[in-house]
Amino acid sequence: MDWQIVTDSSCDIIPAPCADEPVGHASVPFVLSVGDQDFVDDENLNTADLINAMESCKQASRSSCPAPQAWLERFKQAERTIALTISSNLSGSLNSAQAARHLALEEDPSRQIAVVDSFSTGPEMTLCVEKIRELIGAGRSFEGVVAEAEEFLRRTHIVFALCSFDNLVKNGRMGKVAGLMAKKLQMWGIGIGTDEGTIAIKAKTRGSAKAVKLLIDDMVERGFEGGKVAISHCHNLALAEKLRDGIKELWHTAEVGILPTRGLCSYYAERGGLIVSFTEG
Image 1 (cartoon, rainbow, N blue to C red):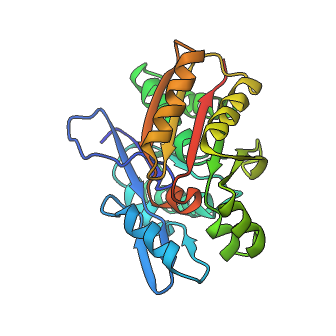
Image 2 (tube, rainbow, N blue to C red):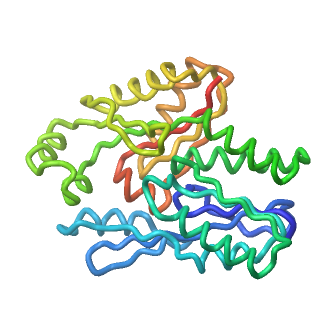
Image 3 (spheres, rainbow, N blue to C red):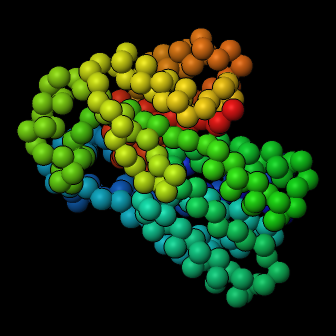
């Protein structure tokens, strides 16, 4: 294989094996531990099972990033590889991929391997994978693809809406009383991904309709003018479609894609949550 894109499973695209594709796409999985159960975040994971286990478990759950060996096995499968990871401020996945790159180049210095920190997760990585494919198809050099992908990520933003706070409570990031009150009042938390690749809560509101409005307001504030949008939803297709319709009503030229969250983003978004990414301009 000449070109391939390798992502960790924080990207919500599940690669489909296709020998005819000019650019391969592979994924290395996180492992999500809930009680005494381990869920491997690969194409076989049933996210409903994961969410049900999380909701029924009283203990805090945890995630483990892909080991260097998992990345290394993928890096050996192409001459040129672009690896894209979840934000280095949220996980050790970037460090793991960089360690694998070092090993792969020691074994075969002729390979070209770049490890790109998305400073994000989920749908922003989805948009970046599409951009990388476009750049490779346009005949850009390896260095050019890497540079333009990094610039693309600087112009792409992420915003999310959560209606469940169980994980935050169980992991000690929100008090039990506050979590119970938020659930009882049907509160939504609206957050953003910062430029540094961290997560910040921006607002709280009551009801899904107001949550959709705040998501669109954030897109306006951060310079969206009708480009590409990716919406990842955790078992909430109806709300994702409502958001899509609201976006299309304001920006007729917007290209909006909807995907279900894979395991890691389901773990963070919890049942009903939305994660949205969009490009400036």
